[in-house]
Image (cartoon, rainbow, N blue to C red):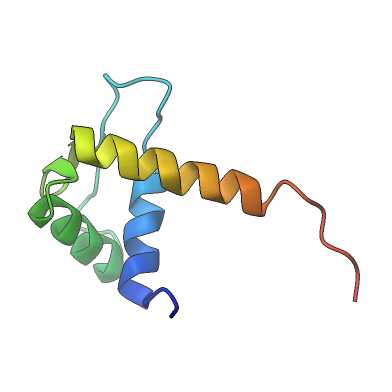
Length: 83
């Protein structure tokens, strides 16, 4: 099992949120990459964000963003060995 390109785009959008400030949302502009716009739409449809173009995290979205950002931190915590 692996992440689809759509999953990765959704994770990228979740990574844009500042978890330290719940009053700060995001705005996905019409000029953004189509994959980002589509990811935001899917996150909105799934109840993760409050607006189709970003907005704020819902409680579910906050949990998902926290997991996404934690995983990112864990994966990048250890320096990679040169090949």
